[in-house]
Image (cartoon, rainbow, N blue to C red; front, side, top):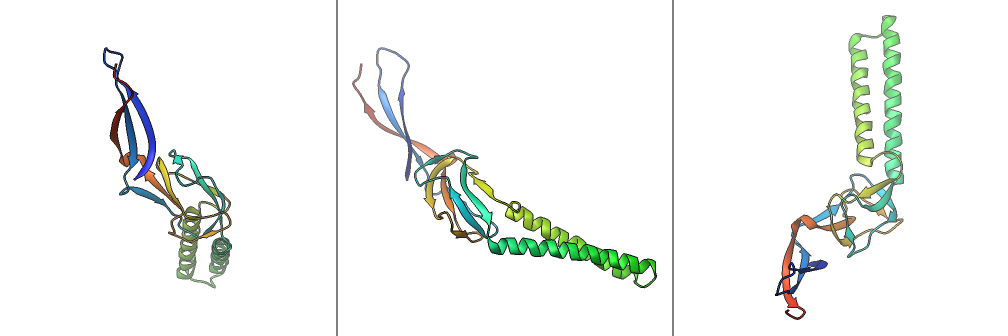
Length: 178
């Protein structure tokens, strides 16, 4: 188990006062692994192993890799081409040189490539740098990346031992009895 913190508690003042140590440990069965959905490059690392992270705290900064940027550029080109094709077929239809079915097929293709672009932007978290934040509070158990490293989709970058799965273990009494 990963040692998280040590707290000392004391009973309210009375004729008998006793100090007690409590060790809070993260359960090894409840790690939270941080991954990404598309290839990125780590530009900055904000945490180290053993550090306590709060929910929402910055873990690392990522930028889309050259492959991810290429995929995004291709999706944008597909959308622009599909828009032009819908416009071209609509103009031809007004001159009775294209059918309604051809225009509808082009409109369907436009909707498909627009959805693909939105999905890609959602998975990438936008087209520029982004900060990955902790989803849970806990202790950093592993950091599997370094600045400058490419991070593959679904590859673990940081592992956090969740505090929600912590347990307190009483220690031995310390200090003199009064």
